View 1: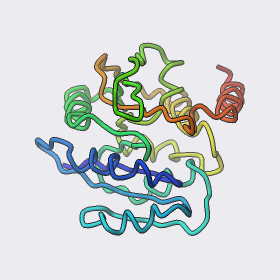
View 2: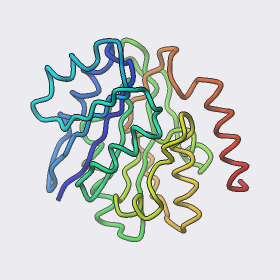
View 3: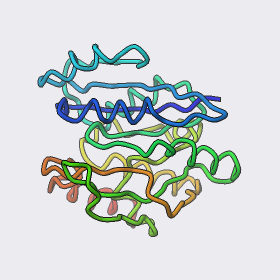
Length: 218
């Protein structure tokens, strides 16, 4: 049994070690973790840093920046795990993230993905607030850290490679259209690092999400 944990990166060298460490430190009971790292054309030293840490990573280095949608799809196409979870390179995971989500999906075969709450943290890793993903709307705004059945993602065609923003929301909406259900776990497993340069805080993210909502009539 294998879980694919994908880290997609663009110019996040300052945070990369922590993200990779949290992936490597996942508690593994009954499964293995395949860590796939996709660098989306970084120019800040990320590639050299990852090469020094790549002893148990599967790396794909894109020569030009193509956007998080395409980089995520590249990771999905490389995935060999039964389950797929993406970690943004400026965030990190609780050590029990994969174990908890994996256990839930193994027990609940009628669900295609599982997700949990987030802690927002500052530069010192101090918890600032709890983000509860109780509603579908909240889920679409925080797509990283969701564990999917890889087969379900491939059934709907995976990530939209053309999207530079809102790729997670688009993916969740298409899963819903295809009648796939998500299982919500009200425990904080994901650590969302607020540092001012977050893609999710970019005004283009909100514009893209609104466009995606119109696209699917939601």
